[in-house]
Image 1 (cartoon, rainbow, N blue to C red):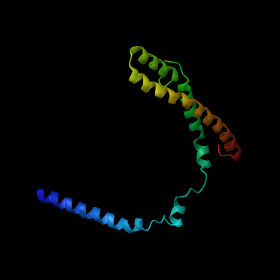
Image 2: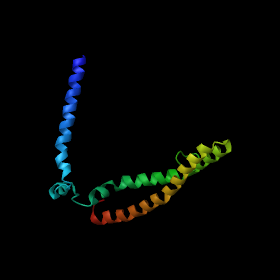
Image 3: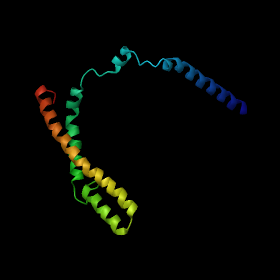
Image 4: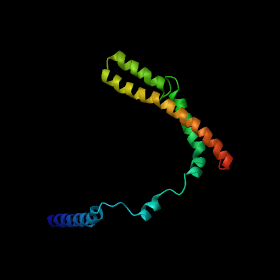
Length: 135
């Protein structure tokens, strides 16, 4: 059993050394990949067809997120519910928890204008997709 472990360790060391030696010269010259290699990974289009295809689901997801964030204190994930939790932590004297929840609340409040902007942007994208006949 000990011989099997030694053999496996030796094979692993040889494989690692081979991998390091074979990668060394390619990295040593400091050049970037050839233009042909990077052209293969470059996008062929701006992805408009895919965006138009996913548009209804994207609109629904953003709408659901805004509905959830703007919900009352009974809605999980709403700003009002998190505000209530911050207040409860403050009243209980849990300052560390209050700080953590307050930071989450700040982020969540900042998320609303971002999502509203995306929602407005998607309306213009929807109009463009309809004009292209993609929707």
